[in-house]
Length: 217
Image (cartoon, rainbow, N blue to C red; front, side, top):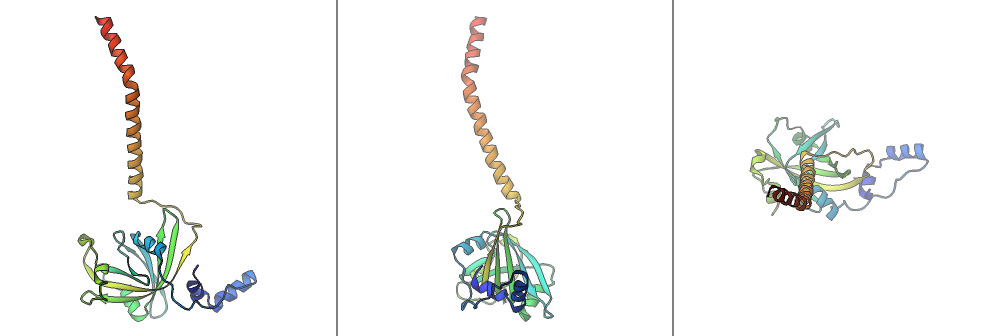
């Protein structure tokens, strides 16, 4: 766990719970700077086709939603900035309203096949489509897949902290694409073995046919 992420969430109440349960607390000085995404985080984020996004209502109630799209729809703009396009949906605009009042959000990214998960604290900003977020950022945020749906707005996320979780209790799950790729490899392997078997059996078949021809002659 990064120091910045740990100490953002290790509140006095958490420290008290640790002391009560284990006799000591993990509390320490706050890391001076927000976390910056490295190559490992960038690769993981860029390979995702979904994530969970948590926000807060004005009364402090938590809200979480699932976001999905083509692989890489959550775009890494730089080491501290993420962005994604918001498509037309049910018109509730819950997250949109929440972050306008309180920009604090949390992202939960899962790779069930590899049993890995990444948590990200960020500050979200809703960016109208007609506003260029910053030089060179609009092209990163705007989706390349025109068939994905009508884009209504953009979200820009300033990364504050992140943490990698352990794989404990993550049940491996596989997508239809994962299964198809595995089946394709198995089918190709079976076809190769069948061809090898035919090649080995061919001399015996040829000899048998020659014997029949001699007897018939």
